[in-house]
Length: 238
Image 1: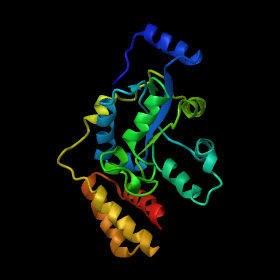
Image 2 (image 1 turned 90 degrees about the horizontal axis):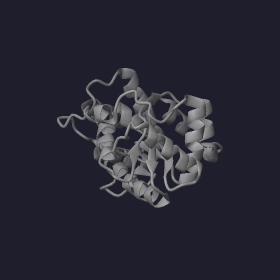
Image 3 (image 1 turned 30 degrees about the horizontal axis):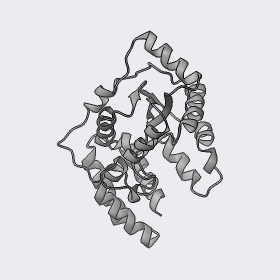
């Protein structure tokens, strides 16, 4: 659902948040795999628009740098996988949304709607189950609680200037980019990742098959974008 533009509604909403009322703002963004796979981002946005647990307050394109990545993911910045995670989140501009929810129960429903963080473990009917490729290549970030939403929205406001009411394009416009004639090769890509993870390496044939599936999903993907996405996928599995 998109936000009302009434200034009074915005003032009341902000007051409730500041005073600890029933509504809260969370941060969500479409990651590089959702953006570069073309239909995936648009399909996810269609699902967001139909979800009554959230109100979309902004929709902006932003580029995350290494410093913001380190602050946003400070809780895992010392983990061995962090360099891969930093590359993933900084690889291309992301679509950032401020969303409004009623309470922590709504947050839990939204996180169930997205599915488990590890994409290959997510239930088939969830966003990540349908579109997440493997492990951390999971399409979308969402604050995991009202408290983390407050921290993340404050951070991204300070670093990137995101704000309520700012729309680089409307969520509806982005969702209309969905092209039903294009295939979704999530399951095929996931199976290749499972095979690579078991082997601990990726063959040239597997890399070429991944490239082929990604080009079928997005015929407009550039060579640079293709290799960026390939690196992200390989890094999640081997």
